[in-house]
Length: 214
Image (cartoon, rainbow, N blue to C red):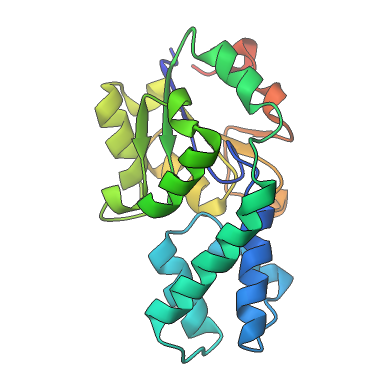
């Protein structure tokens, strides 16, 4: 029996992936880099540290990492300023789920980013339990983030559903032993690992669907 539903944040709870990309494109162009379309899937769902270290190495950017990261944060927050909102269907889904299941949030985003997002959208009101990037030693795709949330909730992995949109996040949930629902939009279906269900919209998550997971 499912007892808990755990959400990723970016691209699942908040409609932020296109805004991250907007800020990151601006950042990389400053260094003469155009990110190939096929590379974006490498970055989605990874920690802040991993994103900046991996991208600097991959595109041979020689800037001071701290300066590069500060610029990236600045451009992303500028993109967030006027456009950030919840994913279509999340608030309605939350109303349904909160009556029957424990609800948690596991994000790779750093604490400072989460604080800014919470100030704008008051996201903490929807999640009794929240894990941000700095709260774990090993970020997604390692299972630690979801295993930590499972321990906090005092449930078993097979009693949890994870809702994710990134390959890193899906693999993290699968490795933790949870059921994984993958939301399309951030990665192509053919790039997804073998998850338990693929959906195109959050309104496809119904009590009937959740009850079908044994």
